[in-house]
Image (cartoon, rainbow, N blue to C red; front, top):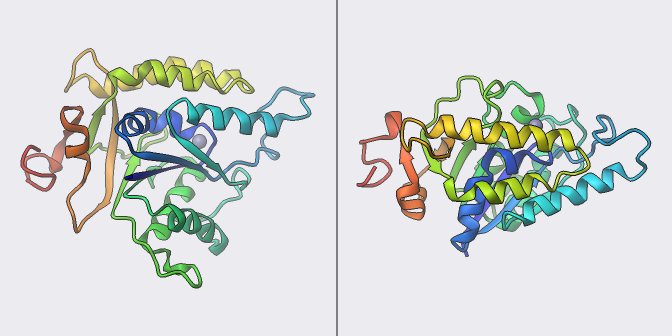
Length: 251
Ligand SMILES: [Zn+2]
């Protein structure tokens, strides 16, 4: 079974940024795993004052939201703004997950994102994915294809998409997934409002009136990207990637 590892800093990141692609791949028989690194909210509580099991409640929401998209989730308990790609223990934690799963495709944050946690998670993931031989005693696995998912528009500075994924038939499932984050209802409202606007904007010049997620390639090769073949008509290259044959004859 092909496996996609989708990495996000915060507990709801994969659902918002690349939930459409996740849901699409899971329906095509892929194993989809979300990895959230910043799972300890004790220094940045997002639950109502007085709630005694806020952390557990947020964790439950996070697991359920992934399940609704056909994905599994792994939560790692780094604290907000306490995670650094320069810390070897951070690299080890990601490398262990990569080595266990041996994903065919990894999606992570855009490395130039303005948010500290997003950026550091992206950088740590890219280092760990280069080879898991950084782990003692492991032979070393190299992730063959890595893409960046897009966060909020104001955070993804200098993000110029390489390709788009049509997600029209994912919008109901995404809404259902967002609704799982009940411990912090403000994020549900925000996602319900912004995801349709952002994905409509990303779709407008390709599939007018539809919905799309935008992605950048961070690495593929020596083989070509698997995505054009897997996604078919729901994949569309843009910019430099288009017409080069780099993605196969149809793109
Ligand atoms: Zn975030």
